[in-house]
Image (cartoon, helix red, strand yellow):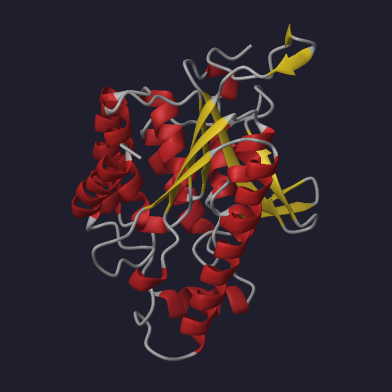
Amino acid sequence: MVKGMCIRAMSYSDGRRKRRKCLAFVLGGGGARGALQVGAMRALFEAGLKPDLLVGTSIGAVNATGLALWGVDLNGLDVLERTWRDAADAYLLDPRLSRLLLRCLLGRPNTRATQQIAQFFASKGITSDVRFEHIEGVRLGMVGSDLDAGQPVIYGTDPTQSVLEGLLASIALPPWFAPVEKEGRHIVDGGFLSNLPIEPALTMGATEIIALDLNEMDTLSGYWGDGFVQYVEKLSYALNLRHVALETALAKARGVPVRHVQLKCPTQTPLWDFGNYQELIRTGYEIAKQAVPT
């Protein structure tokens, strides 16, 4: 059994089954805006809030994985911050979006970018032989989107699964990264079906959730100007809002409280631009610090 696993415990009181308490940090997707979550978690840790379960989508999966492997404490956050610095220096996401879209239309997915980011993760100790069962002190889950089944895929429910495999699936956002193909299935970025993975956290046994949401229109609208791409951005934003509403309602129906923390960027931040990570970390810290008392 994975140490730190939160499961439904079979204890009986007055003839009713009770669940073991399991606080989940749910980390949403949002590219470079994920640095906000790093600062927010520092504020939560300082307030004495420590998760039993980490569930992330896309960049949220990256943050969750780093924390699970390096320590669910302030020291682990220090390592995660240094990893963001290294990611900013590595230019992992190509900003030439039109070129990437053309490659996709021509049927030439960007496999080189996937190899590059896999090498980056390996340099941080996230290699192909690291399994979920190797993680101690917390349980980890990450979410991908199965295009064939039309359902979210949760990595981490099987302790023998590869952490790197789940991570690469959760961040497989076209046109930057090609879909992950396995057993006839095509898995892409989890944000398409559960960008703030509240429902997956429920599936993994969460009894209380703190959700760190990066989906925010103000920092996106206008970046591309008027046109088709802006409409696609608005569509994505609207779908994410709908998913969050439905998954929050599901949690409420199951009696699981969700503390939704909206992390807003101080400036427009494209998904691929990691250069402003320090300011975002500070902003995320201040937002969460103000939210903690409530």
